[in-house]
Structures are given as C-alpha cells and as structure tokens.
Image (tube, rainbow, N blue to C red; front, side, top):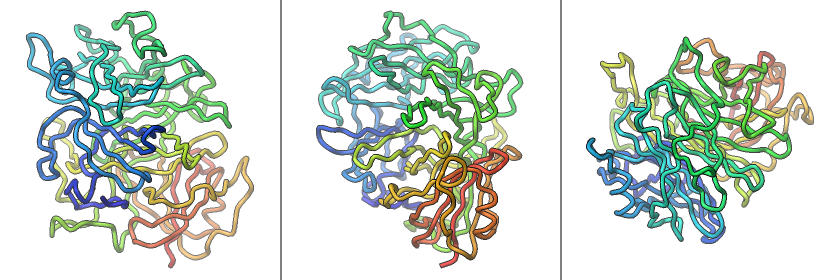
Length: 450
C-alpha cells in the first residue's frame, strides 16, 4: 500500500490506486475507515481480471489504500446483469455509497451496452461497507427510450436537510435531478421511469462531448450547491467543470451567470496538464516509461472529510506516458489506457471551488491561506521561480506549464488559496497556489526553486 500516487506501478498489492475509474469516497463512522468504490474494469496487468461486482478500496488515513475485492453479492450481480433477451451487462459503472440510518446504500449503473442510453440505476444495501450488498430495487430506468432522453447512469446523492435527491445522466438528454424517499432510498413517487428535472445539458451544437459524471455538494459557508461534471473525450480533452446554485434543484450557473442547461459547460477547474518533472514518482514496471504528464482528470466526487474538517475531490486520472497511448480508429483520436484514483484537496475561494495542483499526501490543509477577493490578502510567497498552468477555454487539450515569479502570481490572482504540499513531479516539499485570475480562468501555481 503506497500513499503517494505511483505511476508505472500496476500491482494492486503495492499500488491500490491503479485501475480505479469513476471513484467515489465514503467515511464510515462505524469502522472509522475510508472506502472508495469504482467502476468494474478489466486490466489483467493490474490484477483486475474481469470479475464484476464493484471493486472497493479501503484506508485508515485517506493516503494508504488497500484493495478489498468486490462488494456486490452474487445474487445482486446476476440481477443487475440481466437484460432479458439481450446479452448480459458486461460491467457495472460509477457506484456511489453512503451511510444512512444504520445501513450502507450503494447506487450503481447497469447499461445495455457501452454507449447505450438504455440503462438502469440500482440501489443495493448492506450492513458493512465491504458488503455483500443486496439489491433493494431499481431507482431509475431508461430502457426503451431514445437518445433524446436522459441516460440512467452515473448516480450521485445529495441531501437538502431531510430531503434526498438523485443526480444522474450522461450525454444524451443531459444531467437530471430526481427526489428519492430518504427512508428507503427508492423513488419518492415510486416511478422508476420519471426523469425528474434537467439541470445540465450540452448546447444544441456542442463543440465537445458531455456532460457526464455529475456530482454535487453543499458548502454551508457560501450557502451554495455546487454541480460538478465532466466534458470531453477520455484523452487530452477530458476535464472537470462546475456551476453553482442557491437551490439544490438549480438553476446551476457559471461565473458569468450562464445556465448549465444549453448555455454553458461550467467553469473549467481541471484538465490534462504537465508540470515539469525531474523525479516523478514511478514504480518502474516498464523500462520504456517516460513522464508525459497527467491526462483526462474527471468523473469525480466532492468529499467532505469529517476527520480533518476539509474538502477533497476524488477522481480518476490517466498516465500520459506515450507507451499508454492508444489510437481509436472509430473516434479518430487518442486515449490513454492506464488510469488511477487521485485525491486532491479542494478549497473555496470567493464562493467558487478550486482544486489543489498536487495529489494529497497527508499534509495539513487547515493552514491554507485565502488569497485575493474576500480573503486575507497575500502572504509572502516564496521568491524565485514558479510554474503556472491556466485552464482557459482556448484549447481543451494538454496544458503545459509556464515559468513565472511570485510577483506575477500575485498580480494574476483574483481569488484563490496558498498552501504547502508535496511536489509530486519533483519529490520534494513545495508551496502551491490554486485560484482564478482576472479573466475568471482557473489556474494552478507551484514553487519550483528548492
């Protein structure tokens, strides 16, 4: 079990983060451990051999994880795979698990086939976070619908006091929200075919794929609900975006007040990126591995850690090394095969979330200093060289870092945070900045002089 993200290490015994896709996170107050659930993946080189049933990983500290196997019971797997006259579902996707009223509730997706909009979201329950989880029933069903309707996939749960809401959907008809019965976790009106309300949808003439992988959080200090989602193809173009609303049911807007329904894709807060690297943390499984940055962050969940009283964002990310690049002749574009779970600190700057530039490794996040508008001003940032990456909208592809200095970082920061962390790319301690510049573009900064 390694606490630092290890690229080029594909052994689940030493690197439990490898192979995780569409991860979620649960803090269990009973066992007092963290549990991450993910999509079924087939990666023999990582020890994931094709058994389906929702893989789960656990941790005592949110840094060192252990692969625990799959969580669904054999009966739940048979039920979830059953597509009647059609071939059985090959894998289950995007689970979300929460602890409610003394039971563990898992919402997961079963689709007719990859790329299909005919899918179901199941609710399974258990008395332990490792399972076995038994199906309670279907929560949302879009079988027999066409591609103009929402897809019953990628579930996430958000509570508004005692009211429980399901957020779901991808591509096709957009992202929807639907109220559930908080006592059972099943639809409040009993109708598994009722769509609910659309809260995000791509423009009628979209420039990139999406949205998908939506999740939501309420931040009490700002009084806003935040809707996170991903746009793009699982290569350089995949990213993380956000909108906010005063109401859980929307409308969700970007920083310019544009609606995420057909008007805006949201504020882009992360995408494929490459900081300069002298010693990236690599396991060494392939001798021809070479640093190529990190690509396609996305399909993640906000996670408030009650142990540390801080926020994180948990998502998958791909190793950008050239040996992992695969060209898809149907899509006529590249993707990257090897993916990992990444846990980033998340802060709120002037009412908007920002993600930390580096993976979380146990550092003290409570000492982060708010910068710019609404904050306490600028501290004495370390002088010397800094690297900056801006997630502007000019190119939805790999962002390369640019060198600058502390004074330039201060000038460009409209709002953000400053904190100390571990430099993943260079294996040393450093200072980092994450925020928004005067144009509203999110950016990351990192001190690079030792």
